[in-house]
Each structure stands twice: as structure tokens, then as C-alpha cells.
Image 1 (tube, helix red, strand yellow):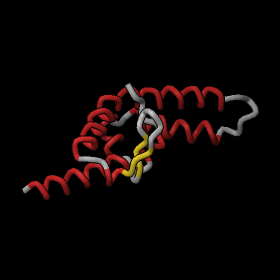
Image 2: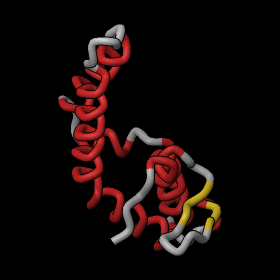
Image 3: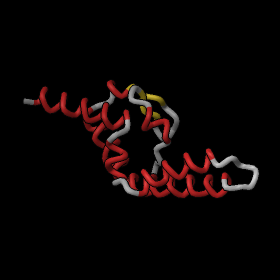
Length: 112
């Protein structure tokens, strides 16, 4: 299964396929866009947990004696926010998912 990179989620204009092919989101078929949404939703929890794990590891490294504590504080804030959120809500707030939802609504309007 393909793991979407953070870049995919922040980039609302293009989608990079598993083989590296870059496609414009607006040129994808409605079915292809729907498949992307389903895949991202399936992966949301695992991606969320991985982000929390990565931030926890960063926080552990930032808590060294020579650290001023600013980085650790910032990481702690992000961790607190991520820990209390729904992975699907986080996913749906990304630029890519917002764009896909807008295009899906446009497709639905055109079908009527």
C-alpha cells in the first residue's frame, strides 16, 4: 500500500502516484480522486500515530542539558494538540483533502 507523504497532503494542486508520476489534481477523474480520499482515510490513524511518535522522539532529543528548552516546548505544544485530535479531522483539514472535497462537490453538482 502507498503511504502518502506530508507533501502530498499539503500540495493541493498535484498528486504523486506510487511510481513517481505527478498528476494535476484537477485533471484526475472523479473515481481516481475518490480512491485517493479512501486511501488517505484508511491511512489516517497510522500516519497520525507516526507523527506523534516522531515528535515524541524529537522531544526526547530536545531535552538535552545544552537545549534552551524552546524547541522542547514547541514540540510539547504540537504533541498536546495532536494527541487530543481525531486523525480524520486532521486529515480533512489539509489543503489536499479540502481541494478533493471541493472537486467532489463540483462533480456532484454537475451530475444533477
